[in-house]
Image 1 (tube, rainbow, N blue to C red):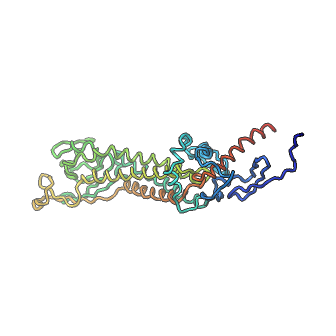
Image 2: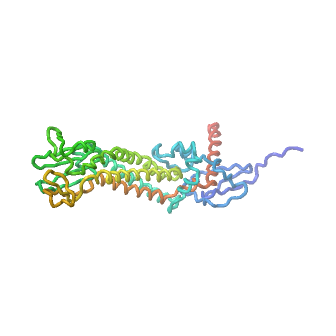
Image 3: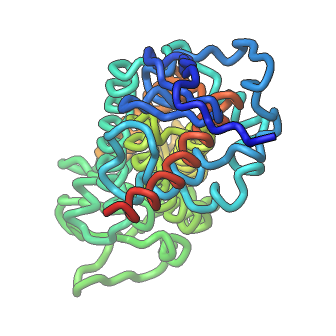
Length: 397
């Protein structure tokens, strides 16, 4: 019995790739030739529903560990679908995700966060604008937070201009108001009245050493004879110094954590590089930065600013503050009026801007390929096809 030669006129079949809008040819051996339009996987035109039933040989294995090439390509910055990509290498998925995809990407938490949203995940126009809004607000917030960092300075000009809190003190025994600007490490005081020091900066660490009876000289100028007891309760003299270090660290961390959120906003503009972990990271870093800013503000207000006097304060002939029960014996009165300084205003505005970025991330879900195992399997086939055809083309050349 002779062997049968292959039939050159064997019937070819057509395969319709879901959501791609194209028909590709398949020969009897089962090999599929992919057409020019391959960007149906993971792009804005994918159109494959996550719950679309499959049957027969077309149903891929459901083990997500078998289909992770799409993750590796996103990490390398070389997605096999679409022509657009993030402009910077630092705006791609972190390499650690490729090493531990089951922990950092393909888990219930990340996939649940990625699914959240009200905008269609494949709506390129909405994606671009939402992430642009998030990027602009985050960039503005980073600049404003950086400006607020000048409150760390101990320079009088800087501190008086960008302090966190400003105070105007009117005293019955003074002709001119006293100006105070509180920063994160020192306080700038300007007392222009005759016989007073004028403009001077006092570090938080010096508060408790400046008692009413001590002598204090700075640049050959004697400080106010009653020292800081005119402005804050001596019992609370160490409050500002106690929280100064943590406030400075929180403010610096708040600025640093802006960078990963900015990179995430850029990455999520490109659907073929977006991932569940990036949306989750965007939430986490934004909330962390928000928490650092709020922590700085609360510590500053509760532990430092509140240690200064507020409102009308009576004093006796020796310059000691009197209790309200002995207010009738007062010789002079100090009227304290506190307002937010430019540094604190910048920090508060930056804090509100973080909320806008969080909302933008919430509204935009990740592409369906990040959760749909069928699309991941199709991407895997596409990758295998390209890997087998490239060597053959090279040999022909």
